Picture 1 (cartoon, rainbow, N blue to C red):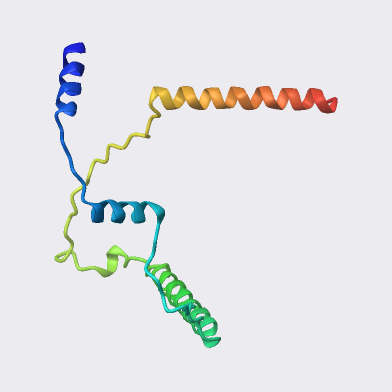
Picture 2 (cartoon, rainbow, N blue to C red):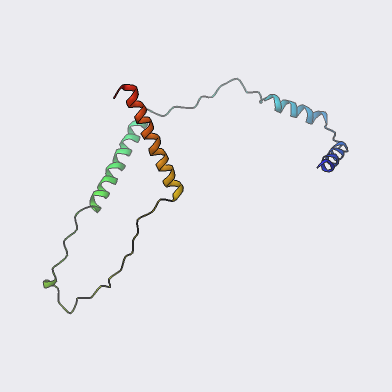
Length: 135
């Protein structure tokens, strides 16, 4: 590591950079945060018109009502299926039976341990609070 550090110091010592006076002034001005001169007028952003609030509120309510209407139209109760007596035996098609194999999700051991730790902390805090209030 010392050899590398020495080599870097030697290389850095051999670097010869010359900066022109103009570039030096520009760098200094940039560092001081000099901005171009303006004509003295400050331009303030225009505020929104008073009707904008009403228009945006009305638009929001219309969209909310449309979403509610769509959700309610899709959640209507379905028509009960026809009885098998009304269906012709010729048109009856046997649907394949799907054997669903579902398992409940199991917490991984770090998450389970974290849950147990949090529950233990809650029990400790509850015990301390009960002692503090005299229960």
